[in-house]
Length: 217
Image (cartoon, rainbow, N blue to C red; front, side):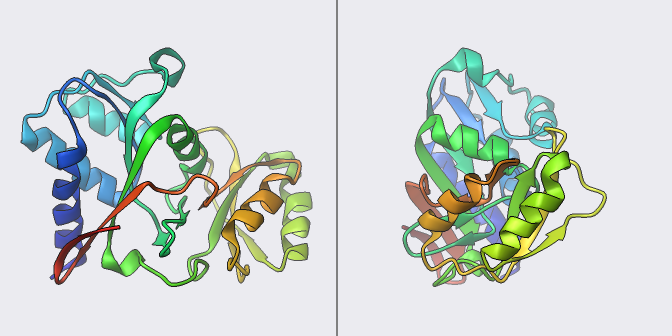
């Protein structure tokens, strides 16, 4: 089964968590794009959504969903997003699409975080996918030196600026056996906006689409 088909299947499986009339947090990425298409086809009617990126905002508005400001909604009942890697403790690496800061904000504001992935994203230990770190531009070189000190090999994401006006470095070779401690260490560095480790606030539920069907963690 193709990866695209698996994304469609896991997107459709996520719909059972969505209730009519809710304000839904919506992430960013190709699996989320499949979810937005499935949402449009489902006939479910949302009160609105809080979006994690300009791209997702455009896609939601195209299907008639009102995009709301998190400052005006209060806490959300549900957030749905994908991930670049997922381990057995439902810790995640996110940010391949560069929306990690807004994704982390919405996850923190949500009572439930449902992560949707295909089976290629499951790993025993996080870290094969390079860890995105969003940085205020003037601090890029200093933060990169600190990341080297943590054992990483940072690489600037060329010609990329986040929706917040910041840069992203993708950090290779980090030891992520203890992702909570590494998340704490990176986010303590002045100039770091956030990193793509979702360990302190991981997913509550992970839905995985594979050749054998849908599995829920």
